Image 1 (cartoon, one colour):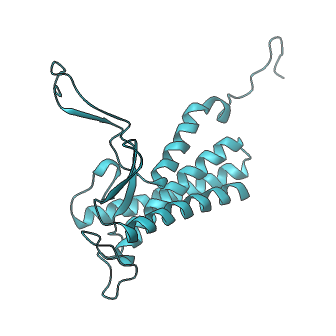
Image 2: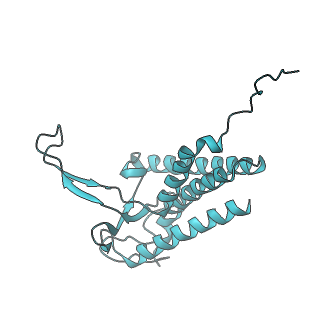
Image 3: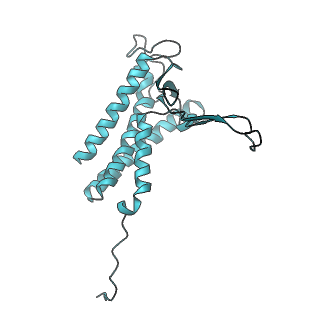
Length: 208
């Protein structure tokens, strides 16, 4: 339980600290290069799900926020159940990373509309005098990590996208997204260790 608690708090703290710094220190669309053209801090906001997808209208935003809260609550319940069942420590770490990432983005979408003013072409203010840019559950998720490791273009003969620019990795994300990705990847990579098959009778043994 202690390990999971430390992981969750650490990820949420790092995620929110970086988002706060970007939100109050950069205007929307601003960027600076950390490692040439390979690692760029680029301030953008995501109004909906991953990769810019969203549900239409105000009701869609509320529905998405409610879904996130339900997923996080279910994840917390399941993580606590795994801890009580004394499962593989790696599975606890993975579950903690996934839950921490989910909570990190829920904080944005739930409270940022109340806590910050619009970014636009100016720096956002924290706890603005005249209120935030949106109501409860209508905040936007802050993204900033951009790794365009490969920038080239498809050859002219390539079907559908011939001649068009190609960037890998194009999506802009945050620490919470990374935490979820790492947690899921660990489960996929080490699933045989995390979920060992039930013990089978040895050869020659006879069940009573």
